Image (cartoon, rainbow over all chains, first blue to last red):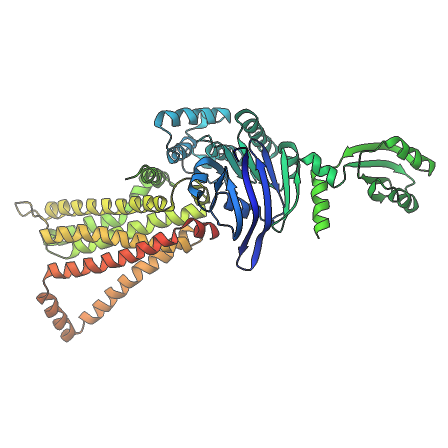
Length: 310
Length: 247
């Protein structure tokens, strides 16, 4: 029990006639960054609200840090930090006052609050601007302050809803680095809902993909890539005919072929050696200019799963 | 008072004086209605102000107007600015969040009301000096302070219920204004109309003259306490995490 951060067991949640979660079961070990992926309306925010004890599931059991969300919601909220869809900062207050307020909420003593506020604001590079009203800050700075606020009481579990949504590259990278450092250096478990596949791929040790409240796949990004195809070869040149495309499609290790006038993209179910493929293409009269072999991305996996489900 | 309640009060006070324009503008905005009742009326009435029903009337309107500004800002504002979701995800109980907001709003209304009461006393004495200080009658003083508190509490409870259904601060303020002021204005207009009919006026004056003012005050106070109790209960029931999350 102690090494499981979150256990969701056959959870269903209905909003009157709409089923938001449909028999969802997930177990998340402690100390990892867990990505919760899905399109808009998949049930990500509903799951977060249930994890925080803000909503009760219609059926099923949810345990957060070993505590049942139905009976121990207050304790769960005491032990977790949350950064929801909006930063939720009091923009007319200073950065310091925002953290001061949440430090008081978690009953930190005056000395501890001052130390922790300085530590957090220094970590995110905003200590010098602590007395400024947050309303003047950029979206990225506000989001980093909101993350600092979620960490004020040193929670063992952090629940995040789209933490980098709407941020520029610099802002999003800064947040991602903060999260990676947290998991690595402080052992904080992180549950992160997102629809940013590249982010999940870079950051998460494990991901789950849901659609319409149902779990479609779960595992680490590498495992998921293996499950739904692994490799992709792109060939640029001339002479790609439909007959040639059909010959390639007929090979057992090929899952899909996409052909255009000067380019063919071949999806493989396993890693392959490209040399025999290039020989085949040359023998069939293709003028090959460039060949590149890449691992399928999590985004490819996601799109494949979404299409299969449709 | 619990630590959590103190924490919410700390934040509400901080926010109140950090709104657009800062502390001075907030104080000035809130003081305008108070100044009308505390300066203009005692100035016009002179020492007669202490015996007239104007002071208790001021103690009804001042807290009502203050609460109409502060409660929508505190409840609907928190929703409009999306800070309530994060607050609900913290370890604070819904009850502490609600009562922290109510205490600051009612407390401020009461404070400004009391200040207006004191300023009225000074203005009436200065502008119509009779050679000695004239004080409010004990009945007027007690009625004014009690009514201030009860009207502030009643308006605040109604304000919570209305603010929770409003999408913006402006909408909440407009609806609250309509809900609270409309019955008061209607009563005023009806009263003025009725008093133009001589026979009715004599009859009503006769009844009022026969009623003991203490009894009248007690009846009004009991009605206000009962209304306050029911509205406050409804506000507490409405201010639940699950309901607020679903809104």
